[in-house]
Length: 390
Image (cartoon, rainbow, N blue to C red; front, side, top):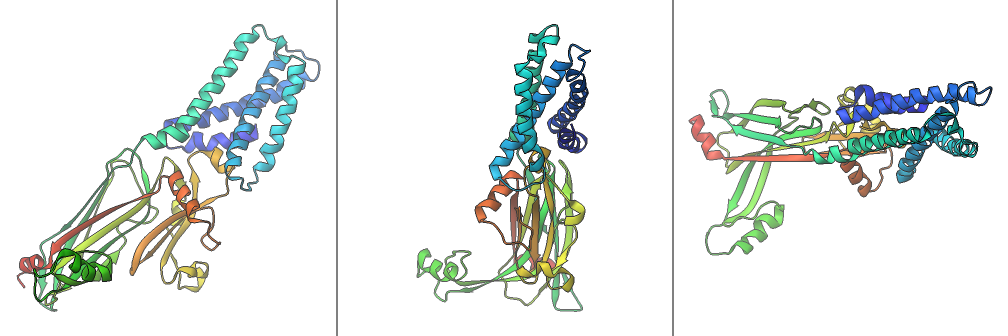
């Protein structure tokens, strides 16, 4: 009774979707049924004043066997230690023994219509199984995630006090799908591109140009260009790590960055990166994840293994509490630094523990629907100079 209540109550009271809440309610109802079966067991093992007490006990045993078998099956997929395994494994053995005893003594004989009783048990089991499969397998896969991202450079202005131009930048994001999300990590980075051009354009083919332009940087291949260099101008979080974005919600960020008016840049571009997990597959500890840990500070020494960076770290729970009871805790980690791309991961290991294989992290990302979206927007530097009047 207690185990089914522990399984069902978090989903019944706080699940995101109706199907997940329905599954939780079914487990809570089965917990109540287990309580009734426990009371009926006193009568069935004693004076047997109520004819249906044997059937009620049988129903409770069948519920226990089905629940513990499901937990055992889910546990066997990963075979990780969890304290709940010390509960459902002995209960599984007990329910098998109890079922054998009740079947041997034909405990259902006390009810008027045993066939209807059996049909009701089968129908309830099918309803629970279909609801569980829908909430954990079909629904999270069937509903896709849709994002709208936009980046616009505004009219630049010349700063009369210093030899720089001020360039407005507007970044826009909207969750256009039907699935609410948690933003794990995000960043926008403004880069200015400079290139060295060949003295005799047109005398060489694209393959020769590529060996010099992209062969050194691994980024682009352009004719007439001998070497391409990028300089980071500005880099910052766009939204906020750990902050949810609901279905239909939109967000706009406006920033201004500076460029030297006498620079020899060709183009200026902004790269926007957003990594997320789906709220219908996992629940992130938002309050804990929102706390930044600075790897160079003594109080955050456990995060010092990745150089100078800001780390966000917290536990993430699966959307189905059955999975949580049969797995070690999972942790979401986001790493941000202005000098390298942002990263995020989900693993059963804490940030300071030895990491598992890359295939394991990939599997965990798929389990929680983790993914990334990107946007790149570019504008000629000459256009920015012209709009500023420099």
